[in-house]
Length: 511
Image (cartoon, rainbow, N blue to C red; front, side, top):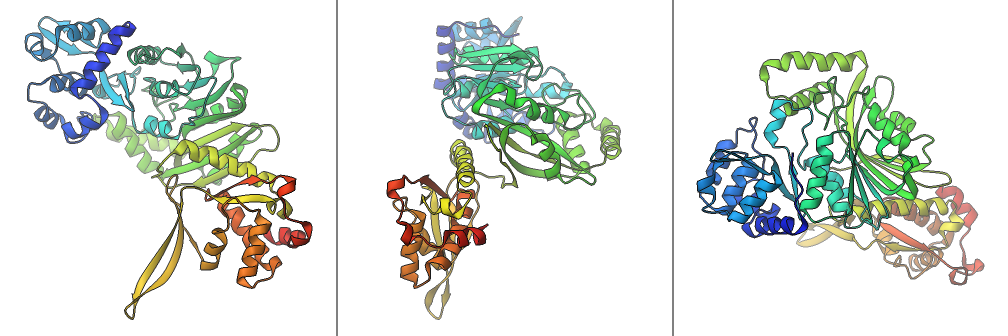
């Protein structure tokens, strides 16, 4: 196992790696592609060729990326003696005669160095393998709500990469894992990166933090839906998606009011039950608002093949493994397997549930997207009548853009479509009519909805009631989809009653 270094030694080690060029951005350029060595990809020969020149960076890469031993008498010609001593003291390297062997993989991610087991360990079916920062942990890292947190829980921490990032906006972080090797790696990585506000605790699910509450819970649990339990990092012993259901059901008791839980998960769709109903049962009675963002859907055959390819490299066992998987799914009526992100927020009162299929390529500040989406749902909940919606000050979001598409016609450009787009979050273009675009130009937060409607109606020579019917529906839709925000007006800023369109009529038609 790895051994903790003191603060100064950790700082010197990080500085050497950074100055040598062992950084996330540089490695992709240096290696041609920042892919891990894999028997399946058959890329070891290429990686060895890319690191063949005897330099400090290549020596580090051969140890902590490719995962091969190097001779001490050759290594000392490019790696300073004090750095070699620290690598040996920490356990990142171990000596066998004149050979120096890597005991871990070391990845640079978002400014942190994260030690984990080497990628080759998965080929040996090592049950307690500690995974490197992989696509799922990177995805959850991007979605993490980055507001000040008094206490954050990283449930199923693995190598601790989510804890490292959360430590910067949290007073304290608790990193838990059922795998004792994972908590050991997470503890080592916290010390290696000079982070002191992370507590590591071993245990299953919420048991290690019984009686405690958090402002933020991040969880990338072992959610694979398989008939096996070969790896702690991805498999669990509960039936189908039972583990993820359990975490959703129990989350409220570990959240402070207005606290968030974000969990990546997979769930099944069984015969006769839409996936929305299955997740609806998970969320029922939780005392939390919920936003379910469904991403991919795979049929059982494709899913089985994918998981076998990822976790087994013995092709001679493929047929037996596939039969085992398919028997498991058919016996339980599984028709599809979905994956996505479940975001919960503990809140007293009537809770909302929002489920939708989202694009797989969000951009920009995803933390702000989550916070603004929940704020939008709160606003719509408060503005449950047309009368209330008329009193707010609607404002287009800062990242909204209006694009015009034109075609050439008889030597001139002819406007064809107007499209609203968001420059961050999920790409959800929305086509609008010219009159709608004109109305939206009035929604700058300086006037109430009713004032904007009356001004627009006057310009368009339309009756206020008719304009209100259309405009209120547009505002609701744009708030829900993230194109618009609003602030509730104070009583002295509201428009006079005499100037208000028929709110009762517009409410009925808008609903």
